[in-house]
Image (cartoon, rainbow over the protein chains, first blue to last red):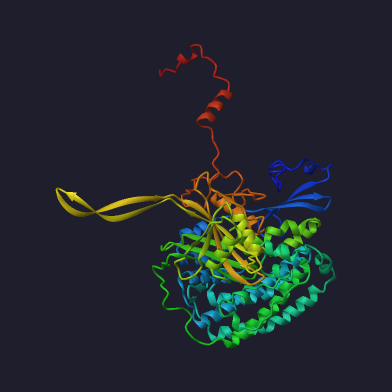
Length: 392
Length: 222
């Protein structure tokens, strides 16, 4: 094995090489292991160079870029609307929220108003996305812990129902390409809304069953409590967002803080954790699903007929005025933002994605130090990453 | 949140010698930004983070922008004497504005729940002078994002603890997000035996044996 871990402080140690006490000899104290890129629990192609003392992690350096295709450069060479289907491919579990974040930024850049029915449809689809993302995350996390298959299939059974809704509305299960600047692409009929209501009403039954099966499980508690603790100070400084931040007890949710869309109209609570460990991050997802169900119930009863797209928005020759805008939403994985600079042309001059799961990996080493290799998998699973978004 | 003028005044009072300009955003988003000089950038950032009223403790987004060299043409009317008669003619002057790289940070306050405050730093030029102070000691969230800016734009962040390529591979030489970047036909080009490599390959083989008259014997058609 070659010594490929770079030292964290190049000015004090020789850069590019492990210090002598960390050479990768078997008879020495530390052994260097390359975990990934092809590993079942790295959720894609992600690699960690880990220095181990016995089974304890003493150093961990993530290696990115296996799925890098320079999404931002492609976005600069495509028209504004041309990037919309490509945002689906960032975090391919949550194409609806990716669409929304991009549409929101362009609407800020141009100053577009969105009709009320479109805002309701956006909220409904974003919360359905949150439900299916969190459900499948819990399934994947348990799969990483060794509960092979069964919990994941339970979660995927519910996820498929939501994906069927997406398919009947947008034509695609995962690559929805649904939002447009100033509205949505197709309208939902009453039958669709009734089906959505039925699925939402039945969702708490699945949640209760899942929680009884899993969250009280002795092995799950043993594997996750006091593992990968994150302090709120470090979480804020490191730009951690989403359920991972709220698991540390920091009350910050973009839905409440910015109040984008029509979120101020709904009554919902923000669940907060106490310890910031892996169990709290896991619980945060389960509790957020309950709140999403609450929002969905309100939205599905309040939605009124009306137009779904702002007719003033140009489809051809769409050229935003010179300026820049940063728009952000609370995605299922954290704060998803798009930063756009327009020079008055048909393409963005600068197109930047603020990827939540990439920035949440900043603290991966801090979380894993002192834990065993088996815990690294659980901690990584609880961060909730999708490599399409991390590497972009 | 306070207005940009108020924040600018606060910073200029607290950090001695800091030069801060407001970059006006002409678009409808109303997100104007503060341009901070590189010398005092770390002190200003520390002030913005620690001030009890501002307390921008959360650096959400850090990114780079490339601005190429620009030529601005200006047309002015000049009075000159043409063949003894005073006439007004148009005179175009070209002004060359050198390009620079920019790092843009979007700051929010989790304590007071306000934001965004957008601050930008500009490099001296796009070549050797592409150096900026790192904000990683102030906000840890800049760690991976500044590495990404270094990787894709080539801005060297001084004071960053671990500045190396993150998305591209370590041997990659260019900066792909720059506006004048042109991607090569073949990324994984390796020298195949030609030119100097071929010469070395030739020296490696033993020279062909000298033929002593046998080359003259040819099969003659009968």
